[in-house]
Amino acid sequence: MSKIEIDRFKCVRCGRCILSCPSRVFMRKSSLDCAGLAEGGAERCISCNHCIAICPVNAISVNGLDGADCDIFTEGVFPRLEHIISLVQKRRSIRTYSGVPVERYQIEQLLNAVRWSPTAKNRLPVRWLIINGREKVVELGGLVINWFRLLKGMDEMLEAWDKGLDPIFRGAPCVVAAYTEANAAWAAVDCAIAMQTFDYCAAAMRLGTCWAGYFITVAQKDHDINKWLGLSRNEEIYASLMLGNIGCESYQKIPPRPEVKVKWL
Ligand SMILES: Cc1cc2nc3c(=O)[nH]c(=O)nc-3n(C[C@H](O)[C@H](O)[C@H](O)COP(=O)(O)O)c2cc1C
Image (cartoon, rainbow, N blue to C red):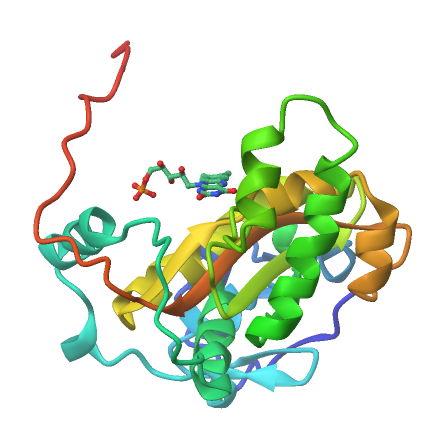
């Protein structure tokens, strides 16, 4: 339940809080009235804070936060569509990393950005693991490989590893993973959205990334890996990226992709 306060002396009766709220927290009897709390509104509130961001006069506070706690958009830095499309086309899965480590402040910038990724019902369930440093990444890669040693048909991958190559994390100096409570509603979707946000922001910083599918698969099955990562039995990784400064893998061209398959109704 949220603690919601409406300052009736400040309210200009614009009704924007009512229109923007996804949970019917606010109401008023007529357009001449100030906004008020609907019955059960505080219980329904999902703390998305849309109301405090949209109120033009800072008349609303939710759990002690109000408009003064909001940063203001800088219109000048809002990207144009062609910039976004260019980012989407330019981001590539990178599988060659330079030896230059990723700085902690760069990762912190990315983690700061993902706070605004959408999550179902604004539950904000996503937690992050950062495995930063090549030695730790190799140790983790070894645990993933050990699991694959128990399976048939993985000879090529195992041979590559035994030759000193890294088919799991591709030589990346850092791995990031997003996890939630196991089997929480929308867990995989929330983690994937947050990770994709991280991914595009990393591309904008000219860092290289690649989804770490083998690692995700094994982490979801092998409890020893989660123990090594400090996760409990009821926590599960749903998304992971390799991260690093790009080595000798520079794309001047956009790889051709087929048209989307679509049904217009
Ligand atoms: C869920 C997922 C898991 C992936 N796992 C791996 C992986 O374990 N290793 C790898 O080299 N690439 C992995 N990839 C990268 C894909 O191969 C890559 O996205 C695809 O070939 C398209 O290339 P692009 O990302 O450069 O557009 C994965 C991608 C996704 C979306």
